[in-house]
Image (cartoon, rainbow, N blue to C red; front, side):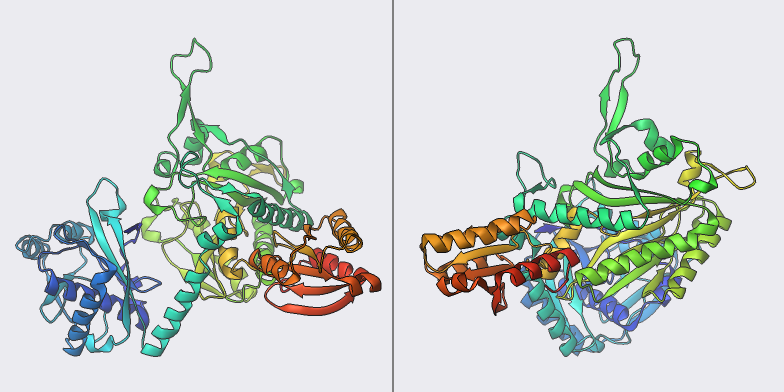
Length: 609
């Protein structure tokens, strides 16, 4: 059974009212699932069952039975009966005392505890369909009969409230769509996504590995995977140089004091590795505590503070492909998508309020440039704002700065005509942020990067610059990471391309294949290979005695991007026969022209080459 992270925050009533028809349908399917489970296993205890971007789930405590995919046909059959009964979703309201007594009498302890999540003054509502009654603020579709296209997907373990100290529940995931055609289309996309699983392709291609002696969530980049890392860093370095960034480096371990100053401790401690303690000298009364670096921004703030700054120095764009370490729970680790060691395409832009719009726009344009390069046709920028009622709690208590920066971000997104969606109550504690969602060609959605505004932490660090009037002012800071981390971004690219990378990115760019093993032919082929390698092309030679069909098959299985086949006729003509992985023969070309095409495609980073 896989593990799942339960991090769903209870929606406000306003957020619930904004749920669209599909979300309401999926929410209703969660109730239909719980109805069916209780009919089959009446002793099941219930927790929550919200809609998700993928579909829905419901969490159960059922010690007498361990759910497995083999149970799905039976549960789905019972769900179909509930749908056929066309039960109405009826809402009712109870007092807090009535609700508590109702659940206690049925032994539903998790529901009793969930009552505390409902704010004082908010109605405690129930929804009933048939015999099933659930604590729920809605909304739902009108009847169970509306849910005619659903499917159960998988089972996962989920700690109650996401805390490993709490009981482990069983989570059943499902999905639902408005009709069977949409469901079938989605299921086909998921099957294609399974074929593209980066963990399988990464192993088959020899890109990365995990080892128990190294530790969970700590990837080892093998030579071919190292190529991907190097090429992405080279791309970022060149792009950022052209955009006026300067590169810096910060240590992998940092004293505790810096994270207290930044505000990450104690609030972020659960996501950090435990501290190392040492005495700097035998006379020290107490040891000094050091942490592995979980993020780069505090170090960049210190670099800004290392020298006096004036308005003439701004904007200052500090970039680093920094290694960070985060303690993800073992059950949450998943291939390259969720790891404990990560290299982040990080940068922090320090600017004046007057410069902010142009800088934020330039960052978004960099994202769009990358989307075009990698062939990301579908994307969405989730613009997360604050909740004024939670100032001083979840968000820094700076109402004017929140309004100012959110208005600026909103204006940039609208004026730039960037596809975005505004999401309330999900900002970072120090300012509004954008999460960048992209879809692979298989239709799978990923969060690959983030873009955040910070008006609070620079003030904590005492960062200032001299204005034109020679007064001290605190800069705004933009946190941005267009390529996210090597780990997550490469995991996405593996699935997006199914391992068939464009020429500039392919671990094995070119292989020269000979028809036969004539020494003169091998010499000609070797010369082509050496010419390419002299131009820093990842090329190798297969001049063995095997038949050419076997050599081509071996190159195809290794996902070599370009094959240059040479026989006696090609040698005599000073030519090569060009083949592309998965596309077959491209015809015969003069040697010089073929080499020039390869070099130009790599130089231009052609997305479809």
